[in-house]
Image (cartoon, rainbow, N blue to C red; front, top):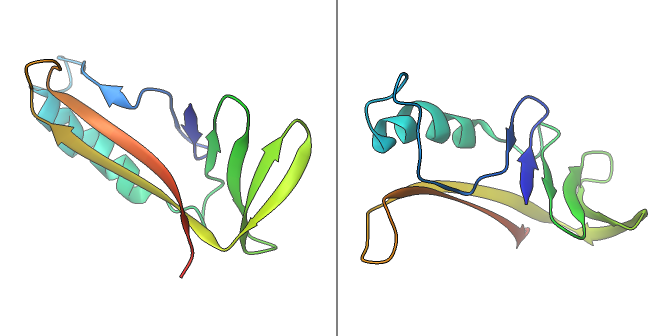
Length: 109
């Protein structure tokens, strides 16, 4: 999966490593880098594209709708939102401390 906004691209959605030269902890990397980026994403104002293995999803500003492009075919999905969230998850017995990023297509209201 890949998320792009024309300026930056995300391909990791469970981040466990950070640049120790820029940040002192994973939480600091989240607060100073990941969170501001995720908060700045606006599917209506930017060319926000979510690419999955079989399809690409984006908002079409002319039609004011979400569209799915797969195998060269364009499918109109209707009103909806591309919701991107990020959170720091504490270490568990089976997983390390990590930043989790989720992307959802939700129905419009």
